[in-house]
Length: 88
Image (cartoon, rainbow, N blue to C red; front, top):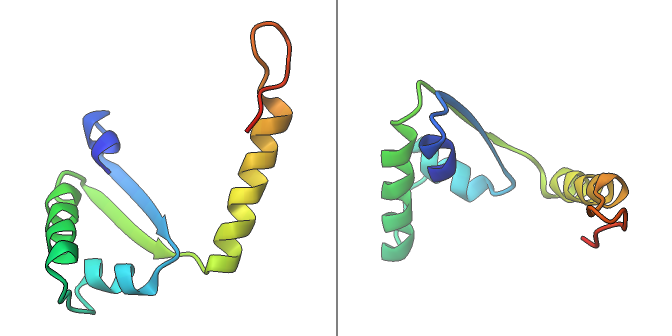
C-alpha cells in the first residue's frame, strides 16, 4: 500500500487470502491484539490516500495457484543480460 501511495496511485485493489484480515479492515471484525490494532490503524490511514480502495478475499487454494503461476511465468520469461535464465 505504501509503495502504491508513493507512486501516486489513485486506486488500489488488494487481494488477500485471510478472512480475518479482510473483516478487520472492513470493520466486520474487531482487533483485540495491540500489535494487530497498530497495523490495522496504519492500513486505515494508508487507505485514505486512495480515491478507490478495494479489498477482496481470494481463497488460499486459489491464491497458492496464482503464486505458482506467477512464479512459473517469471522463470520462463526472465532472462539475464547474458541470456541465461534467472532462477526464481
